Structures are given as C-alpha cells and as structure tokens.
Length: 214
Image 1 (cartoon, one colour):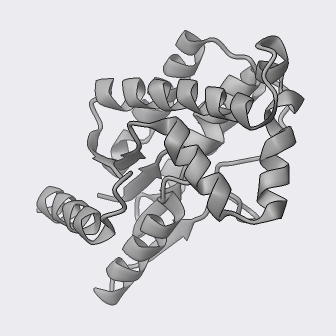
Image 2 (cartoon, rainbow, N blue to C red):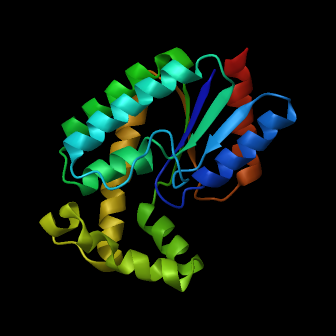
Image 3 (spheres, rainbow, N blue to C red):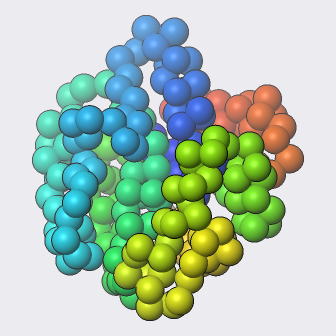
C-alpha cells in the first residue's frame, strides 16, 4: 500500500482524517506525505484549467508522472483528490456523468501500481449535512457558498443559486461519488459520518488499513 485517498463531499471530514492518518503513520517511523487539496505546488491538482477535456487530460498526465516517481518512496495520502479536485470540478464544468465515470476509471487504472486504498466519507442526508456545516462555518465561508454555484457552468445551466442551489449540486455530486466508489474494484471502505462518532470511525479506518497492509 503506497497510496491512501480520503474522499467525500465538502465538510465530510476528509482533511482531518488525512492529517490524523499521516500523524499515525509517521509515529510508526514510516515516511508519509499528506497532500491537502488546496496546498501550493500540489502534485496532481492544477487550478484554472479551461474545460473538462483539459482537466481530464492534465489529471491523467500528472497521475502517471506521480506513479512513476513515487513507487520507491513511502506512503502518500491525498485529501479529496478524486472527489473535490476531479469529480466535483467536472460536474461544475458541465461534463456528463459517463465522461466523469470514464475519467475516474482511467485514473484508478493508472494508480494501480501504488495499491491504492480509498476511504470514502459520506452522509445519507446531504441537505442536513450542508446546513449543519453552513451554520458552523465563518461568515466569510457562508458568503462564498451563497454566490458559488451560480458562477459555474453547471449552476447556470440548471438555474441554481444561493445555498439551495449549492445543496442541489452536492446531492447530485454525493450520489455520483457513491455510485463510482461502490462500483470500483479498488480496495475501499465507506463510512457514513453524520452521527459524528469519530472515535468509532477512526477505529474502523485503522482496522481497515491494518488488515489490508498484512
């Protein structure tokens, strides 16, 4: 196992889980690199790509280069690299579902040599999860969400605006993620996190990784 992907919609706990796993692995004297989705110099994600075709092409190219370079190194953990940085971006660019699914399958094929393990965090009630995050986040974050969806191709095409439009987008996005990960052959675990029982979730995750590492 050379690659751990922590996936899910915004606010699902991806970053926190990734950071905790990186700390745990380092404590066992194993080299680990944690890549936050918005970090500068990200090895995969490149911002401001003009369209879905360019995003798919560049992402596949960057993954191939990463696999070639990383096979002799330690473990890499990515935060939202398939979900937030790829699937969500493609939806917002107006790509159709089959194009998105095919793009993810191409990426999963390329990263096979790194024996990827996917941790997929989700919530059954996406609307409730978004509303909870909205009430807990800063006013700056709320204002960003209020105007986010209407400034995207997907939002304009579907006449989505404000918080309600953002919720509609995330419902579609979450459903597509579940479909993709449930149908993939990659070693994975799916955890419903709406109850906030993180000690239980972390035990499930560490048991999953320990079992698969044997």
